[in-house]
Structures are given as C-alpha cells and as structure tokens.
Image 1 (tube, rainbow, N blue to C red):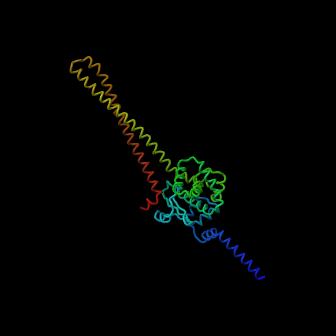
Image 2: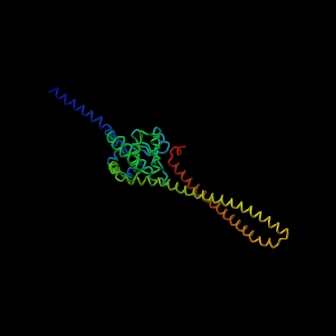
Image 3: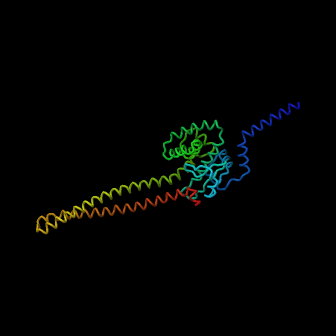
Length: 318
C-alpha cells in the first residue's frame, strides 16, 4: 500500500513538472501581470488600442515602456531597426516605444505598441499554430499591391529573412485594412477594433505621403518651368540676333537715303521689338514663378525632413 501511495505521489510530481514546463511562459506572464504596475503612459496607449482581455494580459506581461531617445536607444541597442512605419522594439519579452511627441505624428505610438504586442503574441504561439498561420500570412502578403509595403518586405527578406513571418504578423495586423477571415479572427483575439489601429497607421503615414506627393508635384512644375525658360531664352537669343541684323540693315538703308525702303521696313522692325519685349516680360514672369515654387518646395521639404527627424531617436539624442 505504501509503495502504491509513493507511486501515485511520484506520478503527481511528474504531472506537475510537465504542467510547469508547458505552462512556464503563462506562469511567468501571470506573475508579471499581477505583481508589476503598468507604466501610466503605456496604460493610456492600451486604452486607445481597445485591447481584448487576452491582448491586455500580454500587453501588461510585456511591461511596455515609453522612453525618450537616450533610454530608448539603450533599451533597443541589440535589436535590428524596424523597417515598417513603427519606432519601437520587442526584446527580452519587453516592449519599448520611442516617445514621439510631435502632434503631426499622432498615432505612431499606438501603432508601434500594437505592432510590438503582436511580436509577443507570435513568440508565444505553439510552433504548429505558427506554421499554419504563416501560410496565410505569406499568401496574404503576396496578394498586396502596395509599393511601400512590398519595399518593406523586400528589406526584411534582405536583412532578416528568418523574421519575415514574424514581421508580417505584426505589419498585416496593424497596417492593412482588409484581411482574410482567418487573419481577422486571429487578430480579433487581441484587438476589439483593429480598424482603429489601421487608421492610426494611415493617419501618420499620410503625413509623409501627402508631403511627398506635393513635393513631387512641385518638382514636375519646376521642370516644366525650367523647360519653358530655356526654350524662351533660346528664342530670345535668336530674336535678338534677328533684331540686330535688321537694325544694321535699316541703318544701311537710312545712310544710303533709301527712304522708301527704310520706311517700309520700320513697322516690321518695331513689331519684332515689341515681340521681343513681350518675351522678356514673359521670361521674367517664368523666373518669378520658378523662384516662388522653389521656396514653396523647399519649405515642404524642410517640413518633411523635420518629421523624419521626429521619428529618429538617434537624431534626437545627439
């Protein structure tokens, strides 16, 4: 009887050990969630993300921290830079987010927090579930016709090929509005309103794309004006040469007392002078328009560069 009791007790210990191994991550997460306070700024982001109970649990377990440039760079120094439109990192099962304060980039911290949270989700998924989900992630990515998205994926293929599915899992969930039902069901476990997160991404992405589009428009207008200027300058050079030749001919007619021929040629000469002066005025207008466009274009470029700097933690720490 004693041996039987010991045997049952031994089996119980083995079972408990197995549970400990398979649930080790959950036990660790549970301990962090219920023993550690959530950073107040991170809590605000969580409210904006409208997380489910599962999403909130993993978010708290990741102890997200919003940091200034120096602290952020230190926290994320061992992590490759994201190639997506986020500025954060997930390392040592912690989420770190760069504190972008510029209101023109509102939404960037929310998208970053959601992006990094999905890294925490992916890390904890059983391998068989990852393998199945990866098929859908890859197929979905291949169906998206967006230059920025495809450029981002190409950069990951080049620099971090082993992390492609992991990154796709975060990018698709936070930046792509319409997804297959299987992925929507998956992300619905963590976000009650994923479309809001996508709108955050679009909001600050548009801050760059609208500026870029306007700058390109200005560049095209400047090219057109430059072509007009060069064409008109060439025409003016020819007109000036013609006028000088006609002036010499008139002087010759006048000096040789060919009054009738001289008088007949004067109206044509005056018309050439008038046309020349009109072209000079048009050239001045083109030059003024060109200079004004250059100023407007450079002002937008300066704004764009400033926004880029706002997203550069290394710049801010200099």
